[in-house]
Image 1 (cartoon, rainbow, N blue to C red):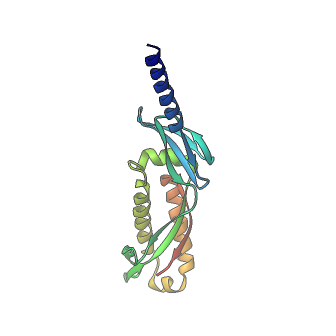
Image 2: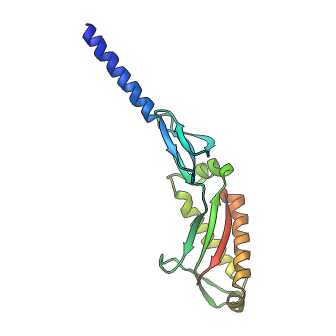
Image 3: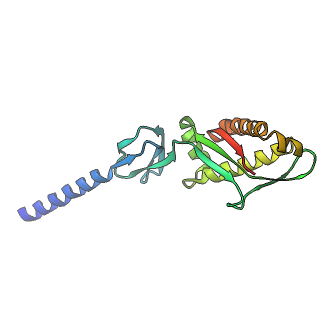
Length: 179
């Protein structure tokens, strides 16, 4: 009887140690996260920003997002050059890149609005960027695209930033017209 009790207590103790071990995770300085509970299938709206060792609980994990500036490119290598028209009706094939940063204050809204699977928001950002940029290209002539690329890039960055800040919980830090 005493042997069975000892075996049972050892098993319970081992399980407790295992659960305690599984309750910790680490977070890099370049990340922010939301805590997801597997059992309740809920996400805590508080954003985890500080790096280091974190206690999340035995049935939880962190859904991680970059804290750093990220880049979206439309280029020939990716076969996604932007195809549009200039103000004077000429065809325009445009390669560019823009850099964005997710706003920590909007992270839970970003997750609950766009992120059914981690990373889904990137497709939304890519498509919205493509739409806004090709729409803005129609406001400039071919002459302006040859001679005022920097000015056009700043107008595009400003409009993207406005939309991303208001609707997509991110800021657009810079934009470069490449091709």
